[in-house]
Amino acid sequence: MKALVSDPWVVNAASAVVVGLMVGLAALLGFRQRSRLDRAAVEALATGEGQTVQDALIASNGSAALALLSSGALLIARTLADGVSVRIVSAGGARLQVTPRKVTIAFADIGFPPLHLPLKAAPPAWLVALAQGG
Amino acid sequence: MEPPFEIPPIITYAVPAFVALIIIEMIYVRVTRKGRYQFEDAATSLAMGLGNQVSKVLVGGLAVAAYYWVYQFRVFDLGWTWPVLVACFFAEDLAYYWMHRISHERRWFWASHVIHHSSQHYNLTTALRQTWTGVLGLSFIFWLPLVYIGFPPEMVLMFSAISLVYQFWIHTEAIDRLGPLEWVLNTPSHHRVHHAINPRYLDANYAGVLIIWDRLFGTFIPEDDKDQIRYGIISQLGTFNPFRVAFHEWAGIWRDVTHAKSVREVWGYMFGPPGWSPDGSRKTSASLKAAWAARQRDANAAAVAAE
Image (cartoon, rainbow over all chains, first blue to last red; front, top):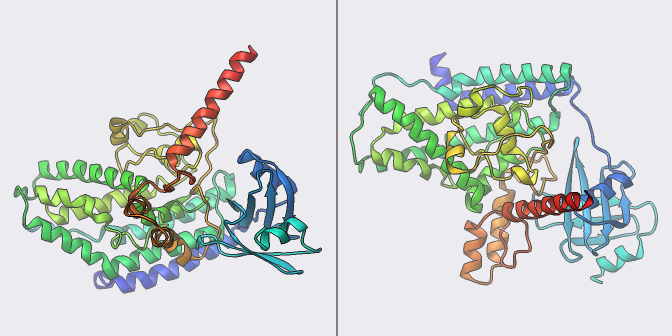
Protein backbone atom coordinates (compact mmCIF):
# COMPACT_ATOMS: atom_id res chain seq x y z
CA MET A 1 0.00 0.00 0.00
CA LYS A 2 2.80 2.39 0.98
CA ALA A 3 4.59 1.66 -2.29
CA LEU A 4 1.40 2.39 -4.24
CA VAL A 5 0.74 5.80 -2.66
CA SER A 6 4.37 6.76 -3.17
CA ASP A 7 4.00 6.33 -6.94
CA PRO A 8 2.40 9.58 -8.12
CA TRP A 9 1.23 8.08 -11.41
CA VAL A 10 -0.68 5.34 -9.57
CA VAL A 11 -2.23 7.99 -7.31
CA ASN A 12 -3.18 10.15 -10.31
CA ALA A 13 -4.65 7.20 -12.23
CA ALA A 14 -6.72 6.22 -9.18
CA SER A 15 -7.78 9.86 -8.75
CA ALA A 16 -8.98 9.97 -12.37
CA VAL A 17 -11.22 6.96 -11.73
CA VAL A 18 -12.59 8.54 -8.56
CA VAL A 19 -13.20 11.83 -10.39
CA GLY A 20 -15.26 9.95 -12.97
CA LEU A 21 -17.31 8.31 -10.24
CA MET A 22 -17.95 11.61 -8.45
CA VAL A 23 -19.05 13.33 -11.66
CA GLY A 24 -21.36 10.40 -12.33
CA LEU A 25 -22.77 10.71 -8.82
CA ALA A 26 -23.38 14.45 -9.33
CA ALA A 27 -25.30 13.71 -12.53
CA LEU A 28 -27.19 10.89 -10.79
CA LEU A 29 -28.20 13.23 -7.98
CA GLY A 30 -29.83 15.49 -10.55
CA PHE A 31 -27.34 18.37 -10.65
CA ARG A 32 -28.04 18.91 -14.35
CA GLN A 33 -29.87 22.22 -14.19
CA ARG A 34 -29.68 24.65 -17.13
CA SER A 35 -30.07 28.41 -17.45
CA ARG A 36 -32.22 29.82 -20.23
CA LEU A 37 -31.98 33.26 -21.78
CA ASP A 38 -35.05 35.20 -22.82
CA ARG A 39 -35.72 38.85 -23.60
CA ALA A 40 -36.27 39.72 -19.93
CA ALA A 41 -33.00 38.03 -18.92
CA VAL A 42 -31.07 39.89 -21.62
CA GLU A 43 -32.61 43.21 -20.55
CA ALA A 44 -31.68 42.46 -16.94
CA LEU A 45 -28.07 41.80 -18.01
CA ALA A 46 -28.00 45.12 -19.88
CA THR A 47 -29.54 47.00 -16.94
CA GLY A 48 -26.79 45.58 -14.72
CA GLU A 49 -24.34 47.43 -16.96
CA GLY A 50 -26.39 50.63 -16.85
CA GLN A 51 -27.65 50.22 -20.42
CA THR A 52 -30.83 49.34 -22.28
CA VAL A 53 -31.46 46.90 -25.12
CA GLN A 54 -32.30 48.32 -28.55
CA ASP A 55 -32.71 44.97 -30.25
CA ALA A 56 -31.84 41.38 -29.40
CA LEU A 57 -31.46 38.03 -31.13
CA ILE A 58 -32.02 35.06 -28.84
CA ALA A 59 -31.39 31.41 -29.71
CA SER A 60 -34.63 29.42 -29.79
CA ASN A 61 -33.29 27.06 -27.12
CA GLY A 62 -32.35 30.03 -24.92
CA SER A 63 -28.67 29.10 -24.85
CA ALA A 64 -27.28 32.30 -26.38
CA ALA A 65 -28.17 35.90 -27.14
CA LEU A 66 -26.80 38.88 -29.00
CA ALA A 67 -28.11 42.34 -28.20
CA LEU A 68 -27.49 45.83 -29.53
CA LEU A 69 -27.30 48.20 -26.57
CA SER A 70 -28.27 51.84 -26.32
CA SER A 71 -24.60 52.84 -26.36
CA GLY A 72 -24.03 51.04 -29.66
CA ALA A 73 -22.08 48.29 -27.90
CA LEU A 74 -22.92 44.60 -28.27
CA LEU A 75 -23.94 42.34 -25.43
CA ILE A 76 -23.15 38.70 -26.09
CA ALA A 77 -24.46 36.16 -23.60
CA ARG A 78 -24.25 32.39 -23.45
CA THR A 79 -25.48 29.98 -20.86
CA LEU A 80 -22.92 27.84 -19.12
CA ALA A 81 -24.96 25.03 -17.57
CA ASP A 82 -26.89 26.86 -14.84
CA GLY A 83 -24.76 29.99 -15.15
CA VAL A 84 -24.52 32.78 -17.71
CA SER A 85 -21.40 34.27 -19.23
CA VAL A 86 -21.54 37.73 -20.76
CA ARG A 87 -19.26 39.91 -22.86
CA ILE A 88 -20.00 43.53 -23.70
CA VAL A 89 -17.86 44.81 -26.55
CA SER A 90 -17.71 47.79 -28.84
CA ALA A 91 -18.78 47.17 -32.42
CA GLY A 92 -15.21 46.34 -33.43
CA GLY A 93 -14.46 44.28 -30.32
CA ALA A 94 -15.53 40.96 -31.79
CA ARG A 95 -15.41 39.32 -35.21
CA LEU A 96 -18.91 39.03 -36.63
CA GLN A 97 -19.80 36.71 -39.48
CA VAL A 98 -23.38 36.77 -40.70
CA THR A 99 -24.98 34.31 -43.10
CA PRO A 100 -28.69 33.94 -43.87
CA ARG A 101 -28.83 31.00 -41.40
CA LYS A 102 -26.60 32.02 -38.53
CA VAL A 103 -24.39 34.63 -36.97
CA THR A 104 -20.97 33.70 -35.58
CA ILE A 105 -19.26 35.92 -33.02
CA ALA A 106 -15.61 35.21 -32.27
CA PHE A 107 -13.40 36.74 -29.61
CA ALA A 108 -9.68 36.97 -29.07
CA ASP A 109 -10.33 35.69 -25.51
CA ILE A 110 -9.93 31.89 -25.57
CA GLY A 111 -11.98 31.72 -22.37
CA PHE A 112 -15.05 32.60 -24.42
CA PRO A 113 -15.19 30.33 -27.50
CA PRO A 114 -16.92 31.47 -30.71
CA LEU A 115 -20.67 31.73 -30.36
CA HIS A 116 -22.94 30.43 -33.12
CA LEU A 117 -26.44 31.85 -33.08
CA PRO A 118 -28.93 30.29 -35.52
CA LEU A 119 -31.21 32.81 -37.25
CA LYS A 120 -34.91 32.11 -37.78
CA ALA A 121 -35.37 35.10 -40.10
CA ALA A 122 -33.20 37.40 -42.16
CA PRO A 123 -30.55 39.12 -40.05
CA PRO A 124 -31.49 42.63 -38.93
CA ALA A 125 -29.96 45.55 -40.82
CA TRP A 126 -27.87 46.70 -37.81
CA LEU A 127 -26.23 43.30 -37.58
CA VAL A 128 -25.41 43.17 -41.29
CA ALA A 129 -23.99 46.69 -41.07
CA LEU A 130 -21.82 45.76 -38.06
CA ALA A 131 -20.59 42.60 -39.78
CA GLN A 132 -19.57 44.71 -42.75
CA GLY A 133 -17.66 47.02 -40.47
CA GLY A 134 -20.30 49.72 -40.47
CA MET B 1 19.23 18.96 8.77
CA GLU B 2 17.04 15.87 8.33
CA PRO B 3 13.53 15.89 9.84
CA PRO B 4 13.36 13.82 13.05
CA PHE B 5 10.33 11.94 11.76
CA GLU B 6 9.10 10.69 8.41
CA ILE B 7 6.78 13.28 6.85
CA PRO B 8 3.82 11.47 5.30
CA PRO B 9 2.43 12.45 1.87
CA ILE B 10 -0.12 14.70 3.56
CA ILE B 11 -2.16 15.63 0.48
CA THR B 12 -2.28 12.04 -0.81
CA TYR B 13 -3.51 10.85 2.57
CA ALA B 14 -6.15 13.60 2.62
CA VAL B 15 -7.65 12.64 -0.75
CA PRO B 16 -10.02 9.94 0.62
CA ALA B 17 -11.37 12.53 3.10
CA PHE B 18 -11.81 15.03 0.23
CA VAL B 19 -13.82 12.46 -1.73
CA ALA B 20 -15.96 11.51 1.27
CA LEU B 21 -16.69 15.15 2.15
CA ILE B 22 -17.62 16.02 -1.45
CA ILE B 23 -20.08 13.12 -1.54
CA ILE B 24 -21.54 14.17 1.82
CA GLU B 25 -21.86 17.78 0.61
CA MET B 26 -23.56 16.69 -2.64
CA ILE B 27 -26.14 14.70 -0.68
CA TYR B 28 -26.58 17.57 1.79
CA VAL B 29 -27.17 20.06 -1.06
CA ARG B 30 -29.59 17.63 -2.74
CA VAL B 31 -31.60 17.21 0.45
CA THR B 32 -31.51 20.75 1.90
CA ARG B 33 -31.12 22.85 -1.30
CA LYS B 34 -28.55 24.87 0.64
CA GLY B 35 -25.66 25.41 -1.75
CA ARG B 36 -25.36 24.59 -5.43
CA TYR B 37 -23.82 21.84 -7.55
CA GLN B 38 -23.79 21.35 -11.30
CA PHE B 39 -22.18 18.24 -12.69
CA GLU B 40 -20.37 19.84 -15.66
CA ASP B 41 -18.95 22.53 -13.39
CA ALA B 42 -17.90 19.88 -10.87
CA ALA B 43 -16.32 17.82 -13.66
CA THR B 44 -14.24 20.80 -14.77
CA SER B 45 -13.17 21.59 -11.21
CA LEU B 46 -12.13 18.00 -10.57
CA ALA B 47 -10.34 17.79 -13.93
CA MET B 48 -8.41 20.93 -13.03
CA GLY B 49 -7.49 19.38 -9.70
CA LEU B 50 -6.26 16.25 -11.40
CA GLY B 51 -4.26 18.30 -13.89
CA ASN B 52 -2.75 20.25 -11.01
CA GLN B 53 -1.46 17.03 -9.47
CA VAL B 54 -0.05 15.89 -12.83
CA SER B 55 1.68 19.25 -13.28
CA LYS B 56 3.26 18.86 -9.83
CA VAL B 57 4.62 15.46 -10.79
CA LEU B 58 6.05 16.92 -14.01
CA VAL B 59 7.52 20.21 -12.79
CA GLY B 60 6.98 20.41 -9.02
CA GLY B 61 10.57 19.33 -8.54
CA LEU B 62 11.69 22.73 -9.86
CA ALA B 63 10.15 24.48 -6.85
CA VAL B 64 11.63 21.95 -4.43
CA ALA B 65 15.03 22.31 -6.11
CA ALA B 66 14.78 26.10 -5.73
CA TYR B 67 14.03 25.69 -2.00
CA TYR B 68 17.12 23.52 -1.50
CA TRP B 69 19.30 25.79 -3.60
CA VAL B 70 18.37 28.84 -1.53
CA TYR B 71 18.62 26.83 1.73
CA GLN B 72 22.37 26.38 1.25
CA PHE B 73 22.71 30.16 1.71
CA ARG B 74 20.52 30.21 4.88
CA VAL B 75 21.16 32.82 7.51
CA PHE B 76 20.40 30.58 10.51
CA ASP B 77 20.45 26.83 11.18
CA LEU B 78 17.02 26.64 12.76
CA GLY B 79 16.64 22.86 12.80
CA TRP B 80 13.60 20.89 13.92
CA THR B 81 12.50 22.05 17.37
CA TRP B 82 9.02 22.85 18.70
CA PRO B 83 9.56 26.64 18.78
CA VAL B 84 10.82 26.50 15.18
CA LEU B 85 7.80 24.41 14.13
CA VAL B 86 5.44 26.98 15.67
CA ALA B 87 7.35 29.86 14.07
CA CYS B 88 7.33 28.08 10.70
CA PHE B 89 3.56 27.59 10.87
CA PHE B 90 3.04 31.35 11.27
CA ALA B 91 5.75 32.24 8.74
CA GLU B 92 4.34 29.86 6.13
CA ASP B 93 0.85 31.25 6.64
CA LEU B 94 2.16 34.80 6.27
CA ALA B 95 4.04 33.84 3.09
CA TYR B 96 0.82 32.27 1.78
CA TYR B 97 -1.09 35.49 2.54
CA TRP B 98 1.32 37.57 0.45
CA MET B 99 1.51 35.01 -2.35
CA HIS B 100 -2.26 34.94 -2.48
CA ARG B 101 -2.65 38.72 -2.28
CA ILE B 102 -0.12 39.35 -5.04
CA SER B 103 -1.76 36.57 -7.10
CA HIS B 104 -4.85 38.79 -7.14
CA GLU B 105 -3.07 42.11 -7.57
CA ARG B 106 -0.54 41.27 -10.31
CA ARG B 107 -1.62 39.75 -13.61
CA TRP B 108 1.40 37.45 -14.04
CA PHE B 109 0.45 35.56 -10.88
CA TRP B 110 -3.29 36.01 -11.48
CA ALA B 111 -2.89 34.08 -14.75
CA SER B 112 -2.32 30.96 -12.68
CA HIS B 113 -4.62 31.74 -9.77
CA VAL B 114 -7.63 32.83 -11.88
CA ILE B 115 -8.38 29.16 -12.52
CA HIS B 116 -9.30 28.64 -8.86
CA HIS B 117 -11.85 31.48 -9.10
CA SER B 118 -13.31 30.60 -12.48
CA SER B 119 -16.30 28.58 -11.28
CA GLN B 120 -19.68 30.27 -10.85
CA HIS B 121 -20.30 27.77 -8.05
CA TYR B 122 -18.86 27.52 -4.58
CA ASN B 123 -18.64 24.04 -3.19
CA LEU B 124 -15.98 21.56 -2.16
CA THR B 125 -15.12 20.73 -5.78
CA THR B 126 -14.20 24.40 -6.25
CA ALA B 127 -11.41 23.86 -3.71
CA LEU B 128 -9.85 21.35 -6.11
CA ARG B 129 -10.12 23.66 -9.17
CA GLN B 130 -6.42 24.47 -9.17
CA THR B 131 -3.88 25.85 -11.59
CA TRP B 132 -1.73 23.79 -13.95
CA THR B 133 0.86 26.55 -14.25
CA GLY B 134 1.63 27.53 -10.64
CA VAL B 135 5.22 26.30 -10.64
CA LEU B 136 6.00 27.63 -14.14
CA GLY B 137 4.36 30.91 -13.07
CA LEU B 138 6.92 31.07 -10.21
CA SER B 139 4.39 31.29 -7.38
CA PHE B 140 6.82 29.30 -5.19
CA ILE B 141 9.15 32.32 -4.90
CA PHE B 142 7.04 33.65 -2.03
CA TRP B 143 8.27 30.84 0.22
CA LEU B 144 11.97 31.25 -0.65
CA PRO B 145 12.55 33.86 2.10
CA LEU B 146 11.54 31.22 4.66
CA VAL B 147 14.22 28.77 3.61
CA TYR B 148 16.69 31.65 3.26
CA ILE B 149 16.03 32.53 6.91
CA GLY B 150 16.76 28.93 7.78
CA PHE B 151 13.49 27.00 8.04
CA PRO B 152 14.20 23.53 6.59
CA PRO B 153 12.60 23.06 3.14
CA GLU B 154 10.83 19.88 4.31
CA MET B 155 9.24 21.85 7.14
CA VAL B 156 8.05 24.59 4.80
CA LEU B 157 6.66 21.99 2.37
CA MET B 158 4.93 20.20 5.24
CA PHE B 159 3.14 23.35 6.43
CA SER B 160 2.26 24.28 2.83
CA ALA B 161 0.57 20.89 2.47
CA ILE B 162 -1.22 21.29 5.82
CA SER B 163 -2.45 24.74 4.74
CA LEU B 164 -3.71 23.35 1.43
CA VAL B 165 -5.57 20.54 3.21
CA TYR B 166 -7.02 23.04 5.72
CA GLN B 167 -8.32 25.26 2.93
CA PHE B 168 -10.33 22.45 1.37
CA TRP B 169 -13.23 22.44 3.83
CA ILE B 170 -13.81 26.21 3.76
CA HIS B 171 -15.09 26.03 0.15
CA THR B 172 -18.70 25.45 1.07
CA GLU B 173 -22.02 27.22 1.44
CA ALA B 174 -23.22 24.48 3.76
CA ILE B 175 -21.52 25.95 6.84
CA ASP B 176 -22.64 29.33 8.17
CA ARG B 177 -20.69 31.22 10.86
CA LEU B 178 -18.43 29.57 13.44
CA GLY B 179 -18.69 31.95 16.39
CA PRO B 180 -15.42 33.10 17.98
CA LEU B 181 -13.37 31.03 15.53
CA GLU B 182 -14.25 33.68 12.92
CA TRP B 183 -11.85 36.05 14.71
CA VAL B 184 -8.79 33.90 14.23
CA LEU B 185 -9.35 31.30 11.53
CA ASN B 186 -10.12 31.51 7.85
CA THR B 187 -13.64 30.09 7.72
CA PRO B 188 -16.23 29.23 5.05
CA SER B 189 -17.86 32.63 5.63
CA HIS B 190 -14.59 34.56 5.18
CA HIS B 191 -13.64 32.55 2.12
CA ARG B 192 -17.05 32.97 0.47
CA VAL B 193 -16.31 36.71 0.55
CA HIS B 194 -12.94 36.03 -1.07
CA HIS B 195 -14.60 34.17 -3.97
CA ALA B 196 -17.31 36.81 -4.47
CA ILE B 197 -17.43 39.13 -7.47
CA ASN B 198 -19.80 41.61 -5.81
CA PRO B 199 -17.78 44.86 -6.06
CA ARG B 200 -17.80 45.47 -2.31
CA TYR B 201 -16.08 42.12 -1.71
CA LEU B 202 -13.36 42.28 -4.39
CA ASP B 203 -9.75 41.71 -3.31
CA ALA B 204 -10.42 40.70 0.29
CA ASN B 205 -9.72 37.85 2.72
CA TYR B 206 -6.53 36.38 1.30
CA ALA B 207 -5.84 34.24 4.36
CA GLY B 208 -4.70 30.64 4.24
CA VAL B 209 -5.32 29.28 7.74
CA LEU B 210 -5.33 32.42 9.92
CA ILE B 211 -7.55 35.38 9.07
CA ILE B 212 -5.42 37.56 11.37
CA TRP B 213 -3.24 38.62 8.42
CA ASP B 214 -6.21 40.20 6.65
CA ARG B 215 -7.23 41.97 9.84
CA LEU B 216 -3.63 43.15 10.28
CA PHE B 217 -3.05 44.36 6.71
CA GLY B 218 -6.51 45.89 6.15
CA THR B 219 -7.88 43.41 3.62
CA PHE B 220 -10.53 41.84 5.84
CA ILE B 221 -14.20 42.18 4.83
CA PRO B 222 -16.92 40.29 6.76
CA GLU B 223 -19.75 38.51 4.96
CA ASP B 224 -22.96 40.55 4.86
CA ASP B 225 -26.08 38.39 4.64
CA LYS B 226 -27.98 41.26 2.97
CA ASP B 227 -25.69 41.14 -0.09
CA GLN B 228 -26.12 37.78 -1.81
CA ILE B 229 -22.80 36.54 -3.08
CA ARG B 230 -22.17 35.98 -6.79
CA TYR B 231 -19.19 33.74 -7.50
CA GLY B 232 -16.68 33.54 -10.31
CA ILE B 233 -14.59 36.14 -12.11
CA ILE B 234 -15.50 39.54 -13.55
CA SER B 235 -15.41 38.23 -17.13
CA GLN B 236 -17.01 34.83 -16.52
CA LEU B 237 -15.63 32.02 -18.64
CA GLY B 238 -17.82 30.77 -21.45
CA THR B 239 -16.47 27.24 -21.47
CA PHE B 240 -15.95 24.10 -19.40
CA ASN B 241 -13.00 23.00 -21.56
CA PRO B 242 -10.16 22.42 -19.02
CA PHE B 243 -7.47 23.52 -21.48
CA ARG B 244 -9.22 26.82 -22.19
CA VAL B 245 -9.75 27.26 -18.44
CA ALA B 246 -6.08 26.54 -17.70
CA PHE B 247 -4.51 28.83 -20.26
CA HIS B 248 -7.00 31.61 -21.08
CA GLU B 249 -5.30 34.32 -19.03
CA TRP B 250 -1.83 33.36 -20.25
CA ALA B 251 -3.16 33.62 -23.81
CA GLY B 252 -4.59 37.02 -22.90
CA ILE B 253 -1.21 38.21 -21.61
CA TRP B 254 0.50 36.95 -24.77
CA ARG B 255 -2.07 38.71 -26.97
CA ASP B 256 -1.71 41.99 -25.10
CA VAL B 257 2.08 41.91 -24.90
CA THR B 258 2.46 41.17 -28.60
CA HIS B 259 0.25 44.18 -29.37
CA ALA B 260 1.93 46.49 -26.84
CA LYS B 261 3.38 49.73 -28.19
CA SER B 262 5.99 50.41 -25.50
CA VAL B 263 8.00 48.81 -22.72
CA ARG B 264 5.64 50.48 -20.23
CA GLU B 265 2.70 48.73 -21.85
CA VAL B 266 4.50 45.37 -21.83
CA TRP B 267 5.21 45.82 -18.12
CA GLY B 268 1.64 46.91 -17.38
CA TYR B 269 0.07 44.01 -19.24
CA MET B 270 2.34 41.51 -17.48
CA PHE B 271 2.68 42.88 -13.97
CA GLY B 272 -0.05 45.49 -13.63
CA PRO B 273 -3.31 44.70 -11.86
CA PRO B 274 -5.58 42.26 -13.74
CA GLY B 275 -7.64 44.37 -16.15
CA TRP B 276 -4.93 47.02 -16.52
CA SER B 277 -4.86 48.79 -19.90
CA PRO B 278 -2.84 51.79 -21.09
CA ASP B 279 -5.95 53.97 -21.53
CA GLY B 280 -7.79 52.67 -18.48
CA SER B 281 -10.64 51.39 -20.63
CA ARG B 282 -10.71 47.94 -19.05
CA LYS B 283 -12.10 47.18 -15.62
CA THR B 284 -9.83 46.52 -12.65
CA SER B 285 -10.89 45.61 -9.13
CA ALA B 286 -10.03 49.14 -8.03
CA SER B 287 -12.16 50.77 -10.75
CA LEU B 288 -15.07 48.42 -10.05
CA LYS B 289 -14.90 49.13 -6.34
CA ALA B 290 -14.68 52.88 -6.98
CA ALA B 291 -17.71 52.79 -9.30
CA TRP B 292 -19.65 50.80 -6.71
CA ALA B 293 -18.68 53.24 -3.93
CA ALA B 294 -19.78 56.17 -6.11
CA ARG B 295 -23.15 54.49 -6.75
CA GLN B 296 -23.55 53.92 -3.00
CA ARG B 297 -22.78 57.60 -2.28
CA ASP B 298 -25.31 58.72 -4.91
CA ALA B 299 -27.96 56.37 -3.52
CA ASN B 300 -27.33 57.58 0.03
CA ALA B 301 -27.46 61.24 -1.07
CA ALA B 302 -30.73 60.60 -2.92
CA ALA B 303 -32.18 58.91 0.17
CA VAL B 304 -31.18 61.85 2.38
CA ALA B 305 -32.64 64.32 -0.14
CA ALA B 306 -35.91 62.37 -0.24
CA GLU B 307 -36.20 62.64 3.55
